[in-house]
Image (cartoon, rainbow, N blue to C red; front, side, top):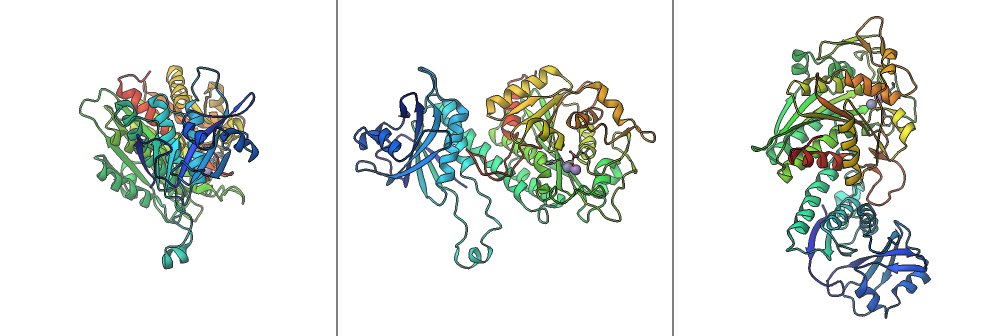
Length: 509
Ligand code: BES
Ligand code: MN
Ligand code: ZN
């Protein structure tokens, strides 16, 4: 895990293996950003033109490494692009700093210590740079270089080990708090990424539940696990129906973080399909290679509850992890089967690949029994949401317009791309079943909204609820960019933690 400290040292004097500075695209060429003054001096005031000669443009994410001239303690300078120069008087946007810090940290894998001298004005900038650096330094290497790793300690490059953040004031309470929050939050996001990236033969529902139990103990969170016997006794037909085809039985995990002075209780529900083969409605080849990511919602909920506990937020946060493996077999649910859900409603399973809504339905009903002030569920629920919003934006649906807007705004503040989506009532009749109360599939058009409408029916009367469909951004298959690695991203954790902080201030509207 990468360590982070705030340093009062000057950029020239700090002992580090590399010094990170920002460069922006001005109208008349490259502009070295605040924080890079000492570097520019060491280059006799020609830092910008040296970089231009090296081909740098200042574009977002661009990284240029060069050996340091005399006068700098760090032997290497890394210039990272910040994109267009902000208008006079404007600060660099937080997300620009977050991504730049991420790109720099990624380019420094294998390095021991780097000093980050990016532009810092407010505590918000400290938070953004710290988050970007700690998320960007992440690498999932647990399964690589097996033979070499075991023998000589050789193997894949280790992440950047240490970040010294310059320009922040360690004695400024707000700066210090921003750095501490960033450390706790990014450690939990990176833990969520590890869970998502762990292959499904190792991360079974039982194994996930064990990780949650251990983390709960460590962080003063009460954890309860319902195993398949308890689920059967409780009548959790959705979880059992999805899990019954697998040799790895389902689990429902409850994580309860409570604060003695809390005024609000927030319930978070996560889809935790540790592997989605589609079941008897088997996914075709080309569609199941990344389906270990189908527990990203549960990983996000888990990370958010632990973050709330580590930050000591004045709010109660309950996390529900609906864990199951969706496999085809002689014991699997068939298309045509009817399940009796935990709520008592019956569901005709027309497509066993629409399994997420079945496990979530049980968890939503169970969460509702405790009358929280609001419920948010998070799920890699539909391919349709990816068709609608692409790979980097999650959809937000809700039974309350104001709550949906709040979540959209909090996501924006957190630097996560999202967009509000409707729940059109006319799509409900597509799920009418001749046999049961509802079918688990409806019209193909608007499939993401149909799934949302299904979930809505399992939320308790009068409870404010929102649904985040993170199927697009949960798992990144392209080349890494900014602080986003290949594989699990930890999508929605930052938004959920913002929501918990909002609830801690007594406001959930
Ligand atoms: N886990 C998938 C959705 C998904 C697809 C997530 C691709 C991430 C990447 C979900 O369980 C699923 O299979 N949904 C079906 C629903 C359909 C059968 C109604 C879908 O979207 O095709
Ligand atoms: Mn599926
Ligand atoms: Zn799924």
